[in-house]
Length: 102
View (cartoon, rainbow, N blue to C red):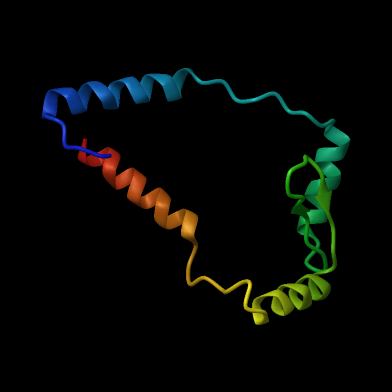
């Protein structure tokens, strides 16, 4: 539940969040430079897509046409539907708006 805070308390929370984010360290890279370079070159190829696999740290590399055909087939079933806009961006902007109000 989100509740309004007085200005002093909101400023304290903002400073605490800012301090935590500033002190946070970036995670160490878990793949060698050669693999990062290979993934980068694969990402730049417009005929294929590099996608993360659910529940693992692997990637799959389907060609773009196959991916779009499978996605369209799933959307045509009653199990899935296409969303208008990015849901995560809407959540992010709502989150940021809430923080700014603090």
